[in-house]
Image (cartoon, rainbow, N blue to C red; front, side, top):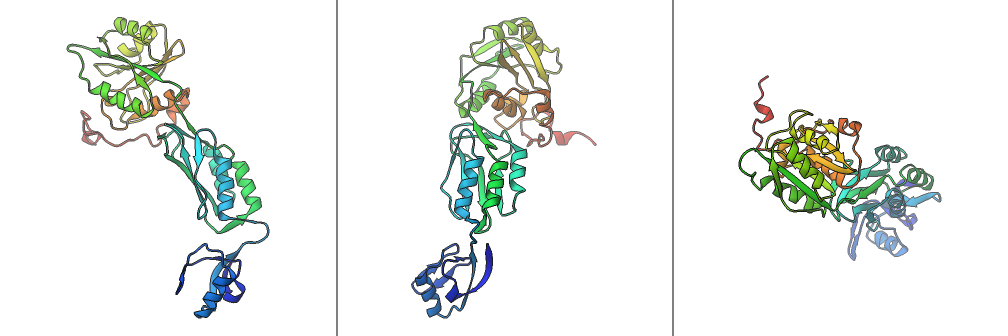
Length: 328
């Protein structure tokens, strides 16, 4: 592509880089100049214009953006119509964004005029959420670079919908029944992903009755919210999972709030031990775990380890001892 100042009389077919007001109307930037436009410009004394002219091997911004967005888009995404070199990729349904960072990085390294910006990996989305935007910065780019970028970013972006549709919450008590606050917060989180929470289950804060409730839970995923914080891998919650015949695959996570979470499974059914902060609707580590589990992602210890970068979340006002209260 050639860009710069052109004699107006020689600018037919070029792409106008800056809007120009004329008596008969405004010629907007990005407009392809026609012979009638040239005559109108000359008639009011415009001897030159700043414009871009595509070369034979170039693709225009909209064509390039549409081609690249189509290459990037995998499962669960729909594309907007290309305009001003931009195409947005939108989630078709609630779920989470799956981003192949290596592919995105390779895509963006081909040509600085070819860009895609995305949500963070595993970010929760609703139907219509923008997962990414492709933008061609210049008015045209070499077709060969478009092909390179398309190959590098093939299917790099997805929006994964939940594979789990029903959930059971088991709450424990040490005296009176727990308030409905924790259940309401969980229901709100599940509603966003179209997951149904079944009837309330409350048991004493002991491993044996909790294990029995875990074994008989009807939901496709089981949540455990204990009356007292789970502070050890052998505490009541994790011990109950093992007593029920399941396994605990993770205790604790490098996300705050949310450290005191555990994850396990029984007969292939996920069991998530919620931290106390999950009683608040504010974002915490449990959100990151449950959203991925509900969308069918098997979390490994490495997955948990990588949550620490960016895992310092916003303070919540209901925290018993705010982090800022700790003495130096």
